[in-house]
Amino acid sequence: MQFVIFFFFAAVAVIFALMVVLHRNPVVGALSLVASFFALAVMYVLLDAPFLAALQVIVYAGAIMVLFLFVIMLLNLQHQREERTRPVQQVLGWITSAAFGIGLVYYLIKYAVYRTVPQGIFQSDARTIGVRLFEAYVFPFEMVSILLLAAIVGALLLSGRAARA
Amino acid sequence: MIPTNWFLILSAVLFAIGVCGVLTRKNGITIFMSIELMVNAVNLTFLAYARQFHQLHGLIFVFFVMAIAAAEAAVGLAIFISLFHHRETIDVDEANLMHW
Image 1 (spheres, rainbow over the protein chains, first blue to last red):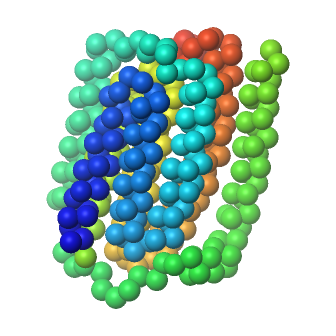
Image 2 (image 1 turned 180 degrees about the vertical axis):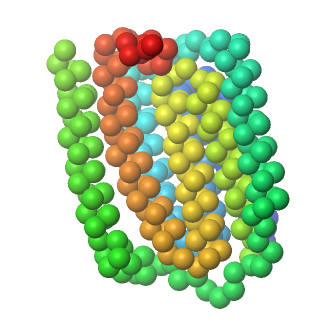
Image 3 (image 1 turned 60 degrees about the horizontal axis):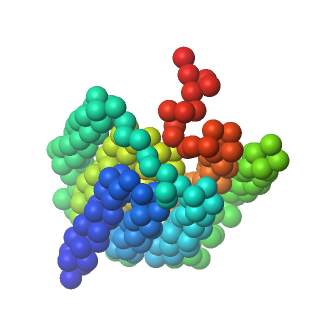
């Protein structure tokens, strides 16, 4: 049963990821990316990380992708025809990324072999993560909060000045 | 239990798709979405290894990556809005002021 779920959602993730890259309309791309993120959330559940699956749905599929969609709609980009890149660039891009992907998969199959499946229960609920976060990772946590504040100020400054000009 | 390798291979495939998007597209927002796709592929790798070795560090790293991706999305999209107001397009080839 787990294997069926894995293959189904792996296929969903890959197909919608390809839609992001191949579709010319950015709105369709953004919605495909949401679908892909949902499939990845299922992967997180299969990896015994339900808390991060919830975060994936709320933060990625919820907040970040809504921001993307909002900007696409705001700038009215869905009607703008995207010019194609030069054929040389297309061919080189496809060849490079395909070679990169095939090489990565090849070396993963060859070297990163885990024949033993981990035993026991992997404790990764919100409580365990929270305790670890506020004990060993307090400093990075505070740094991230400052970073987010800086990002808010930066985003306001950048888009606000553009609106005035 | 699903072997860790399969998750790693899925994440490698998603990463390669993201690389392809960055290399072959011109629309700035699509390139940005491809970058988000690559970030997510890396997150999947972190979680796969976290389960393989029963380490919480991987999960906490994913948590931080998500926070930083949110910050990155906010600033990046603000830059694209600014670019659109100046150039009326988000074609990345048009943003060539710092081009060599």
